[in-house]
Amino acid sequence: MSPRRSYDQYCSAARALDVVGDRWTLLIVRELLAGPRRYTDLHADLPGVSTDVLASRLKDMERDGLATRRRLPPPGAASVYELTPRGRELLAVLQALGKWGQSELGGRRPTDAVRAHWFALPLLRALEGEGLVEVRLEEGEFHLRIGVAEASVYGDGPAPEEPDARLVLDVDTCTAIARGELSVRDAVRAGRIEVTGDGPPAKALRET
Image (cartoon, rainbow, N blue to C red; front, side, top):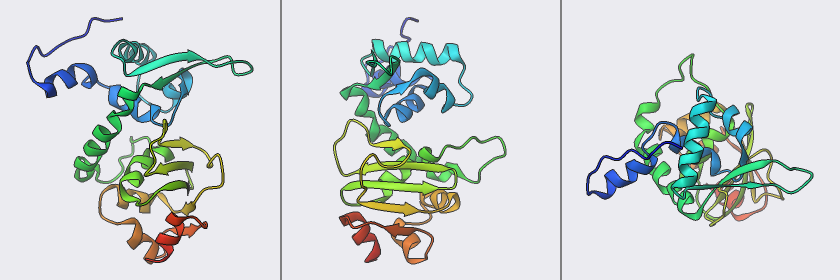
């Protein structure tokens, strides 16, 4: 475990960057907001990170109280990483950073990787109300828990139980929402999002 580097400045922003300012740390947080993840899953969903750097960042996050590691019981018998309550508080930081970075998103470059669940945080900012929402893209499915304090705010794959709303849309629509160019309600009105389900989120979106 490498010693923590410090800006040595008596400032809360500098102190925060001492903990989360290293490259990859906040993106690891983004992945762990989905709940417990195995090392191999984290590596697969963080294209470009080396195994050494990922291992080092995870150790640093354990040391700094942002993440913990535990062993799953049989038949899983694998180690997973998950955020601590303090680590989950970084959701607000990532949401603010994502909103600030909307204008930087631009068009997708040929070298840009993409994962369906990376659109989870922009949709969390854009959706209103409370409930479980399942999202389907051609690239994959994920689900969100909006307006509810949960250990995980999104997850890969279909919702683990009957969702309050199902949204079907394409990446172009998701990208426009992520850039702040299109609201979810306007996308529904324009027929760019198909909404099904009987929960309050679905009913609110169909009434737009």
